[in-house]
Length: 151
Image 1 (cartoon, rainbow, N blue to C red):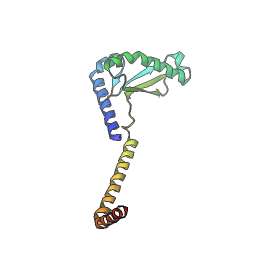
Image 2 (cartoon, rainbow, N blue to C red):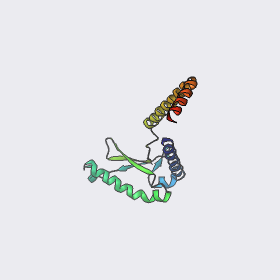
Image 3 (spheres, rainbow, N blue to C red):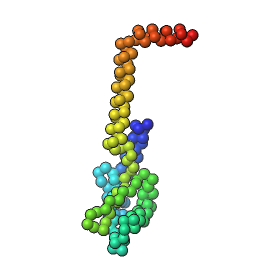
Image 4 (cartoon, rainbow, N blue to C red):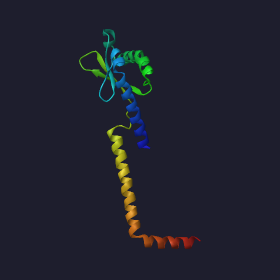
């Protein structure tokens, strides 16, 4: 169910946000910053020998650097919850590394789709209710006839 998964994601995001904000100094000593919504980010500068290679080599270098930071996240208890996102910084040999909880359900399109489906179901149930309320005698008579035919 969407609401259950959405609630679970919001709880994980809240937990990671609280831990990250409470440990800003520890993360700051390792070169990380925490923004107002609890995302953890840093800039990774590529050495010249890596910067001149193709993007796959650059991403492998970044993943290697990320493994160096795994111990910090394990100590904080958020290693299982944060997922890395890499963005190249234009005109530099650097990448922005953003660590945040997965956001599969906390997005606009899944929320809109859930809302549209829920409103459609509510509208359908309302139509059935109105038809049933105004035609209750006929429905009851039809039901009695069907029961008499069967039994």
